[in-house]
Image 1 (cartoon, one colour):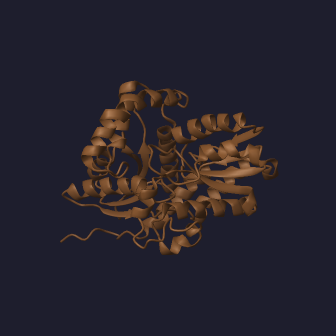
Image 2 (cartoon, helix red, strand yellow):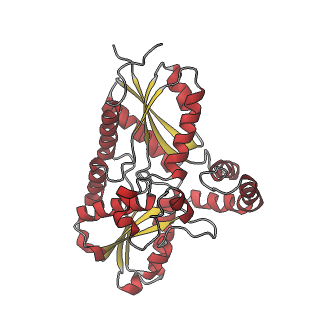
Image 3 (cartoon, helix red, strand yellow):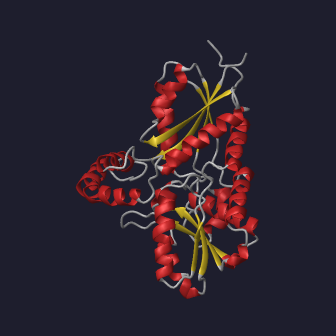
Length: 351
């Protein structure tokens, strides 16, 4: 009989507990990553320990208080629920586990766990629809690094960024039909994606194409396969098409910026403040950069985004929850795993 195939569903992470020490530990691990704050190591250490970790943990703790549930952090709770659903759909041929880039369950611990279970073939599903070096890139780097340390190095097959995968778009369309039964009830739709420093986009582009002219992303996908911004626009276009929206009925924006260096524009908070004055007083907001709701969606968009929009004169603000553990999304993930598993060798060669 063929051996089992391990499956790792890979997401960002979360503090372990709702207390200052746990939040500080999480932020320290997250923001010390050179793929997140990509400046020289000494400067990054000074910035992190001299400024950020002195104030941000307490601010973040208050934000986490608004989203924490009896089951803990939503991103982890939804991740565990999704893992179980995908396991049920795939059956005994697969062994599905959740891993987090920061916090637990950690990538090294999950790889060791699968090795202990005798699995030398693993399908990895980075739960980031669009590729960025600070999300997919850093998670895969750690995964490859630890896998390479194992005496029996496993065969790894990674699901590619699925920003326009038909099953991903289908899952979101199902969510939108459920959450927005009457698309005409809104003047405008805002697709808000997690932001990145502009330098990250340029570092992924060796041709000089990215951010070199206003409409670079319209023709960027084929030229720059790692362009996060172009992938975001493609996702929004696909979803807008599913909603039957014209070009003047939706926009793309970027949230969660940090620091003073230029990040991808337009900024979500600025757009929300401007929309009512431009005649869009009834707005639906969603973030297809996330497949599980977390601080950036529930608190940043659902709470602060609403406040910004309503204070600017808006009358109806509808934040659309993410895919989370919905059955249609679990089915999509299971299908992508089966698809990717076909690229794995039937058995490892033993020399």
